[in-house]
Amino acid sequence: MASQDKWTVDGIHHALPHSRLRQQLLSDVNLTPIDDLPARLQGWTDAVRTLEAARPGIEAVRAYVKKHGQLPPDLQDAPDMTDAIVDDGRGRRGAA
Image 1: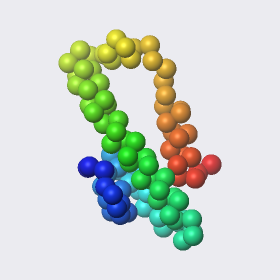
Image 2: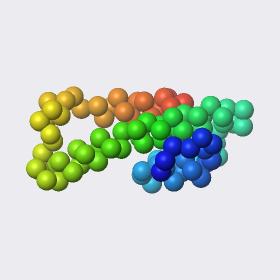
Image 3: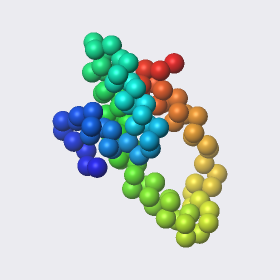
Image 4: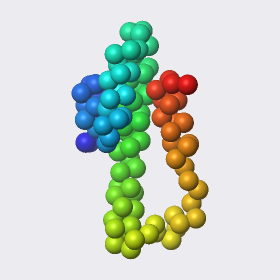
């Protein structure tokens, strides 16, 4: 999905790549106090934009792994960023 100037909850929902993320978005929308909702939705919008910006690189790595059976040489010694990404996601949602 291309970046949008005016996001909707539905647009954010469809831009998320995983069903768990989409469910978390809907939960956040339903459980966030109205006054806090714009900031919460801005966090989700920022996350989608970050994912969209990273998509070409992710797809290139995915294609390389499919062809060669391993990560590209420049990523083989890269640190595992899983925890940092999860923490970033929690921060964007305002979760502890």
